[in-house]
Image (cartoon, rainbow, N blue to C red; front, side):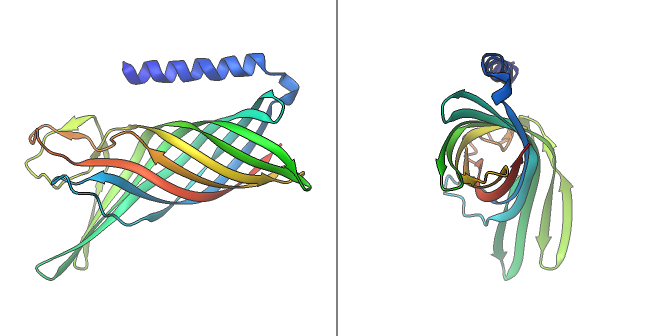
Length: 226
């Protein structure tokens, strides 16, 4: 119920910005790019996670809704992939696990655009909401690999405290971006993203478990406004 309420409030805000902005000032576009993603947080012993970054991507449609000179709300709908990789050694045997989770993501950024040279410099920040739709967890022991499908749920029960293939589908956090837009509508954008939601599901078998995963990453994207 809480998640539905948040989504309803965000949708209402977007509708309000659209209704009160001048229709001729609203512009639409497409954006795609590559990211390096990982999980931040704590492991089962309450120690800081030390996971490797993995290459991922995002792509989708964006909309700029101006509301004041040089300011607009930039939103859209993106297909975004995230994840992380762990690597360890036990009794001389190499072990690793890699997570690949796909989300439908809604960014809502306050964007400042000011003319610089023949184009516009862009600075922005704001929240994002995301919902997991599919994913895989790949486990490798020595040279033998296996895969599990990511299960989306808020909680699960397992006697294996180190099994993490169940994730909360709902994610949220913050964006910071810096970019440059050419007069022909093509733009280049550097961005960083910090997840605030705990995305790993609760293991109800171990009530004192401290494991916490949060998405985080940075990347470069290219866009085009029509």
